[in-house]
Length: 208
Image: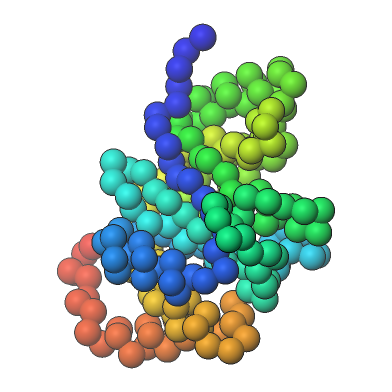
């Protein structure tokens, strides 16, 4: 059986403190923000608005975090992984935000893994195209969510800039009272307006 996976695309975790998360990974460790997804009205009715943001950790690998607007910590632990124990009151979207994403190079490779999973005791539960990637998802025998993903297209420098502005706005909004996705988007718009005059124009004849 051919081995088609090409390393880890990203490992993902939830966070209740996105400002501290950004300070730790971006400002202390020096991992640049390379992508962010703002999601409103996604999923079932009880699914909150959220932002999914990614840091480059080298070798085309990333670590990613979900911040759910309006969701308070479910519990705390004195030792170990603060998110390791999930009772029945914890929503499934939060449980599944902890997952490992494995990278494949092509649609054919992704569909081959879909074929293998669908023929097994762990069939694909979801196949989604979101922004720059297409992914399939299942749970392994231990209950861990596993994602296999392929790139739909390269991420552009403009999207990298958008991610930087989004995370800057997130840090400000999440550090204040009653953070919402609407407040984040409004603050990001303000940042764009204030900084746009300093951005260099595109050379004539060049289109992104």
